[in-house]
Amino acid sequence: MSRTAEKMRAWKGPALLAYGFRPFFLGAALWAAIAMTLWVAALSGQMVLPTAFDPVSWHAHAFLFGYLMSVIAGFLLTAVPNWTGRLPIVGWPLGGLFCLWIAGRLAVTFSAGLSPVVIGLVDLAMPATLALVIAREIVAGKNWRNLIVLAMLMIFILGNAVFHWEAARGDYAAQGYGLRIGLAAAIMMIAVIGGRVVPSFTRNWLVKRGAGRLPTPPMQRFDKLALLTLLLGLALWVALPSAWLAGAVFALAAGLHFFRLRRWVGLSTLSEPLVFILHAAYFFIPLGGLALAAEIVLPELSTLGAVQHLWMGGAIGLMTLAVMTRATLGHTGQVLTAGPGTCMIYAAIALATLLRVSAGVWPGGTMTLYAASAVFWIAGFVGFAVIYGPLLLRHPPAKAV
Image (cartoon, rainbow, N blue to C red; front, side):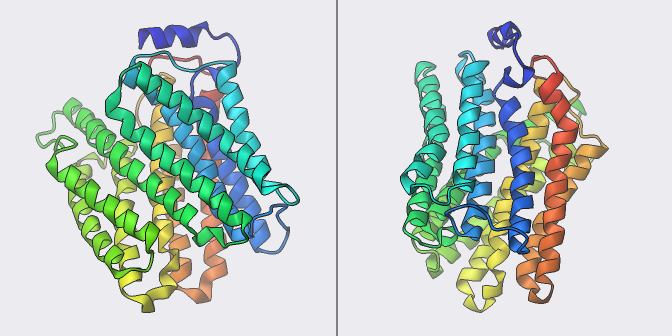
């Protein structure tokens, strides 16, 4: 960390380019709010998106492969130097990578009339470059343990490429293989990386308070069984999304991950939302798996098509927000605690998720629930930009807490 801090201090340019989490976390939050605003305008007929994608596919891509890709980049560019002991990417190289991400958002959004090849190449340029950078760092640092993270990133990028291919063919990419591959990779990332950091951060917080019961150490045999079961369920769902076997495995995986989460004693952290939100976000993994299992096994519940948003908005939206808030506080030298504003943005994203899922269960109130969900979603991420933007833009780099 001393060499990392020295390199960050040596950078005399904009603070935004002093460490990987800074541009990508702020960019992700702003894009989440902008993309939702555009989606609501398109959904209400107030505008026609200038994209070659159908509107729903654009919406799905904007969140999964736009927003989430930015958060993944910010997380990996911050975490990998800690994992490998090598220096972080700062300054203009970091700025160039961020500009590639922005170019991808513009290319997909304003893709009407553009060649599908051009759209795909521009959008995939940043993820491919990031993968090469992470691979170089892991190999150079001989950090073989985290090759699994690189593998999940590569599968996520593959999902994006397949999504582009399906959209170019005129398929409904929002329900295609590409989206399922990307979503499956994202859920596995949360299950694997979350399985390390959630019990670790919980243990650290409880130890400081002299708590008697501590989380079960991560990556025990039970954890590996839970992860393998989830992986099998996701693989079946990607290949055969309506197969009863996928639903049965999802139900089993949900039970294992509910129990896995219970072993991390999250209820003991209720007094510190910055820690408890990690548990709340992880809860959406088994909840989403159980809901998808019910939808697959009981086809008459087809109105529950929105349950996929338990993963998209709950597991991914909440977990990424939890990671962004904690990392920003820690790496800008702030006290690791969630203030009232942070608690409000957590609540906003949780409400947005539940309202969006409810829209699929209560058809009579669909548009009202859509609108309410969008308002809370936008409020949550604009709130992050307002509260944490000054820390990302102005505070000098500091050693992580």
